[in-house]
Structure formats: structure tokens, C-alpha cells
Image 1 (cartoon, rainbow, N blue to C red):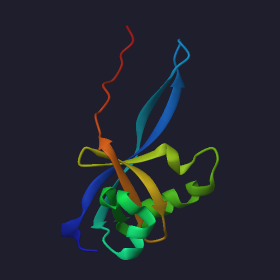
Image 2 (spheres, rainbow, N blue to C red):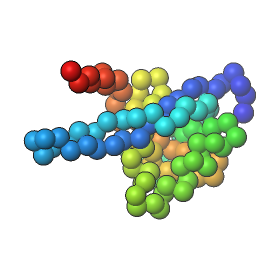
Image 3 (cartoon, helix red, strand yellow):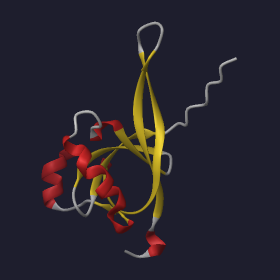
Length: 121
């Protein structure tokens, strides 16, 4: 892994809070920041797995596999599942599709807009 190709990403966790009117508000809180390297997928196996979504999929790997080691146990965890985590790269929000020992496949879901802080007066 060459240092000149590294990007900084944020791992965020979604938490739901119940509002007084009964609806839920989802907020993203920062878990940690990581340095990663990206790779676009173009092989036939990836095309058969992801199909039309292949152009939204990016494969990432972190320095010393820190991110992979953190996310791997959350694949089969009911309380703290992988579906509650998002990765933010260059103001784009990604959901995690697959976690392996040496890489993570993520799918772009849209632009990330930072939520303003709410102050209680």
C-alpha cells in the first residue's frame, strides 16, 4: 500500500432516538477516522455479484487492516450490526456491503450532508 494513494475516511454509526410525536430520528455519530486506499471493481465475478450496482461499488482497504478488524465481528451481531455503520468519503455516504479479511466493499447511497447541532434553550 503506497502512502501517496491514501485517503482519510470517517466511520459513523447511526442511532435512532424516539421523538415526542412517535417518529424516530436517525443521527450519525463519528466512531473513528481511518486512512484507506480505494479500488474500483471491474472483474466478471464482481459484476455477477453486484449486477447493475457495480458502478456504485468501491472496494477499500485500510492501513494495517484496522477498519476490517473493527467491522468483521459486527457481521453476525444482533445488537451492534454492520447495517448501523456508514463510511463517509469526500462528502459521499456509503453503506457497507461486504467485509473480508483484506478489504471492504461499500456502495454509494448519496451525498452526505452534515446535520447541524441542535441547541436546547
